[in-house]
Length: 311
Length: 160
Image (cartoon, rainbow over all chains, first blue to last red):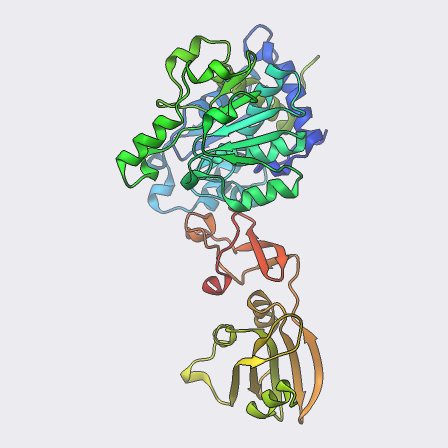
């Protein structure tokens, strides 16, 4: 599979075959990600980790993935520490970092930043989230988590709940799931439903998502319940936020009607949309999902930077 | 019964030399003038404008027409017109006769003609980058930003 030296900017850069290749390789990476096996597949390589926006899981899991493979990491995590604070544009910053490393991971507050970086960089660029735009490595680890839990992605009933309008993870996840014949249900208040142009794109790919505002109706059929955070700042009226946030809160009571093997996922951080009592149920899969960021990002780094892992 | 398009010809007099932009979507004539950069200080020949003119073409009942005397269009202007008036035709007139006539046409990509309507797009943040769009629909034109992946809203408001 030809990933070497290629950018990963959007999940649309990948077809089903490429996604499955990454998921298969991610599975092989799990013992290495846990430290049970050691392979310095990227020994001598340097990864540039540029995070111009706060991140815990994505930044640390990329660093952990690189270190597990013996790859050195140089990083920037505050704009104030760079020449951007002196007025340097992103394009020049990328050109400079490009000269210091073999691949660049970029998190940036502006949509399209990763595509611009990929245009100007000689080395491959991996998008770690650009504003409200794409976050393809999150999508891949979400798919990996679902496949590991359910055995296959084909024909799953996936319910996406929460902020489907602004949440960047759900747009690319929904699009990727259409490649696997998944049945989608979109649960959100009208004001936070998935944008129509994304829904149209899903329909063009043969998926006709069901929309509802009532979470309870969607739970009994669900194989996967993917929960996202509803952000307080989207609501001018705090009372309206409290009302909506309360409606979509997942707790043990609402999960009583769920299938016994239904899994609950969340890209984290959660605030209070999943009660902590759910953590100890077999449904909870969000911490496993966070761990899966490491093997999946190891698979991505290895494929793009030219590392080899034995079976 | 009198042909309404003949009435239109009477209302908008023929030109000796220049360009006729016909079948402009109803209400877009002033945006076409904006694309052509027409303002009070740079007009040195006659421009005739017909707005809300009857037409038989396609399903449209009304169209706009712009006639420019002694002027031919550059390719960038023609491409921009295609963005707001995808059915428009361009006729080059020489000595009252149509020397050349063609329909405007959008390619697969639009480069440097419009800005992205997403204020948080990297192309609107002072970076050295030319806005670029995939053409996802031609009539009406639907453009998706190559960089931020958003659909462009209100093309006529975002012409460069």
